[in-house]
Image (spheres, rainbow, N blue to C red):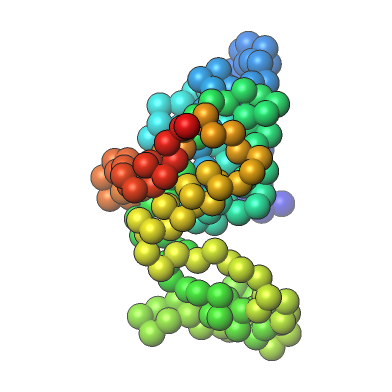
Length: 193
């Protein structure tokens, strides 16, 4: 058993010991909103948005991008669980800004081992056994942080399954300060009708 596994199971045992009445929380989020944000470990939506368990839906993926699956989750969040407002929150110093589709495709084609990055770019250290399928994936990388927030809010807003009355807010989380910074063009694009 790895140290990480042991640590997680020990932390879970402590959590269970103090679980209290959380088993009675309702399925719909109590504050009726959802956040789409990045999986980056430096982001803690519960802390930066003042959430407690049961307050909101938090959907996370690489870059906090409005992928088809993220939009699917938001639609379920609204249609079946009653969220009435959505936030798209990207962040500074995002790893999705460090590569593009071509780089990722080439790295995967080279090997399936973990790559490294330095000042000269990404490097593969694998054994040459890779997978060419990565060249056919749209990785939703980010070349302009503010524009990516705008694009994602627009993509959600333009989806025919998304009701016009849901406001969608666009923000960037500053990893150096913890502050949420509005992207006005995104919030304008996400205005409810």
